[in-house]
Length: 266
Image (cartoon, rainbow, N blue to C red; front, top):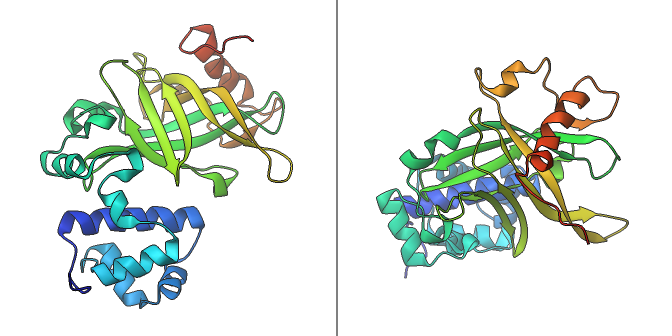
């Protein structure tokens, strides 16, 4: 296969999406990636903007620079999806079976931005608040999520959304080179909030990482949504003395008090 052969439109768009995600995660500039991959910044910019498709040669060089396989991810390997199923999802506009076989029209109601609340890992009694955005990815025909406004920007998460009919729950899944982070959330309440459990790794001293699970709440940031009733919306670590703490704590307590999720005693 000639190395200058261009990828097809769907493959090129999916590679562009993954490249943008990875340089954001690594906090690289596009110039840094171009230098590492030994390609011109003009070639990279045109491919990322869709003005020119990625070629196999360019893709291989970027893969070497990023230390990951972009073409495998195009085929759906991030979620364990079989390549044929991922391609079918791109054509039909339906997510693969591994993510729930949903269509965009069936899940459009979940798209948007959410105020996300969980207990702080670093300060007892404090609440950690940030933004989560959920939206449809045309290139892969799935819902994706991305966090922002995090105090610890280096740990910003993004990934895929699974919505199987069987459980009636929503799964926000991060898979980075086999390392998982998972949110299991309830279907939205009548006012749009989602409550559930986050399971992740907590950073400790040095390189120590400890598995941890904690309640989490996602409140839609819509003009007519419940967040509109808040006197103030703040992001970051919200301590007990903060004006938003009481309201945020009340929202977060609903996850356990109303049995949206349970943390079983040992």
